[in-house]
Length: 142
Image (cartoon, rainbow, N blue to C red; front, side, top):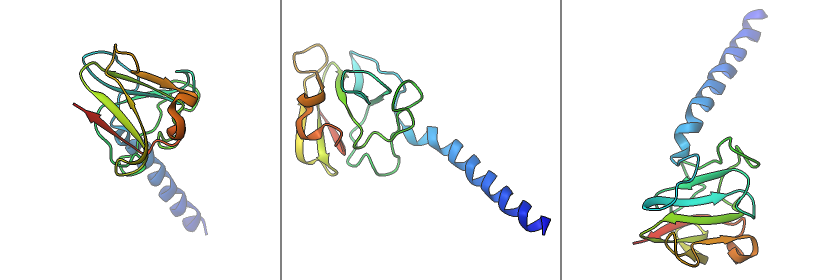
């Protein structure tokens, strides 16, 4: 009987160890946002450029697909996935605008942020329109 109890426990430990190891690798994003130059889109969990933040530096056709981007442990919303959890956005890239989309595959409603340092580089809360808490893909326009 003890053998049956120990074996599942070891399996649970292995699965948890695998999840802990794979979670940081899945993020493929920078924990804290940088601004200017070749930096990326800073996505905030909160609607006033607050809460957890993560910088996404590449086009993503589906933020819900692997590798899934999660908010790191740096504020309210930490550990939640970015897709359908965006409260505000700030484009940190000084050369390219970036467009965020409601659906995967760069489709449906969208909002474009101008390059960093220009008017329209940041949008928060209701200024995101239909993509508030509904971001599923993003594309840099260089």
